[in-house]
Length: 151
Ligand SMILES: C[S@@+](CC[C@H](N)C(=O)[O-])C[C@H]1O[C@@H](n2cnc3c(N)ncnc32)[C@H](O)[C@@H]1O
Image 1 (cartoon, rainbow, N blue to C red):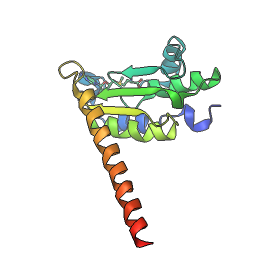
Image 2 (cartoon, rainbow, N blue to C red):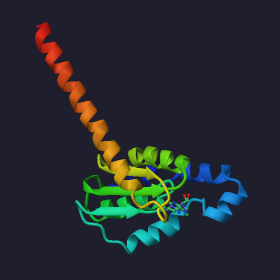
Image 3 (cartoon, helix red, strand yellow):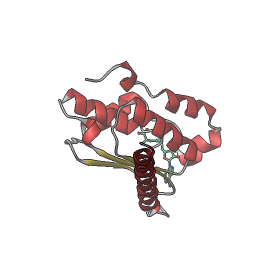
């Protein structure tokens, strides 16, 4: 079930307020109002275990709305593969925080890049994610081995 925080994109609003007019005008760097994302999400039926990609993800407003539509329909957004790209690293950082706040689940891959001229940026983000997971797995395997020998 959607909760109060699932209906708010506070970071998106703050980021929009902080932006210079030129960024809003030239790159469309303003958050999409919830009424609009809610309407858009209603047109995109997402099933459990589906993939949703937003090439101009901003702070993730469309993901928020889509996750709420899923929850309202008895589906689980934590099963979805969410991928997003944005040219603005601050927006991607906010989106990463929002992904946790909005309980999007363990498979959220975000990339900083230009979706028009650098479509491979998401592949690089996948690679980096895999590297981090491998390091974490290796680290815990080493810790377990050390703990074994200390016994
Ligand atoms: C209207 S906002 C975010 C929209 C977002 N999908 C939402 O639902 O709230 C548009 C975003 O597109 C990003 N953007 C503009 N040009 C881009 C490009 N070439 N590649 C990736 N992101 C871009 C901006 O930085 C901005 O965050």
